[in-house]
Image: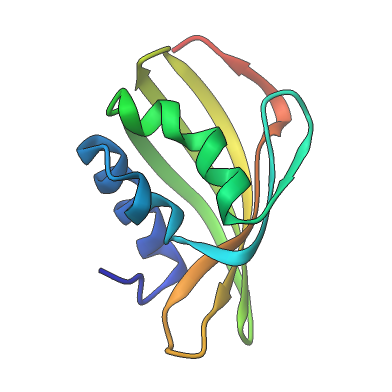
Length: 123
């Protein structure tokens, strides 16, 4: 399934994580993805991202989200989203994400920064 809007990426991410489908989760990200992990390190590319997200998918982490704002400029969208993860470790984060429209018209995340704005907190 593909995301037809930037907002739809969040819904699919939540669904695929709950299913434990790491392939589908990684497929929501652009091949050139850059992701800032919990340690503050930039992870680049889908394979490196897979390594980061695989434990959450394996645990079938339960995500919930509240999209605060989406700002579009042509083929790019800046997203501000509040995420809550209730398992395996309860946390709440405020993520800044950049999505890019793909040649087929779908949207994928290009940049993910879930840990910079504020500190993650127990739910």
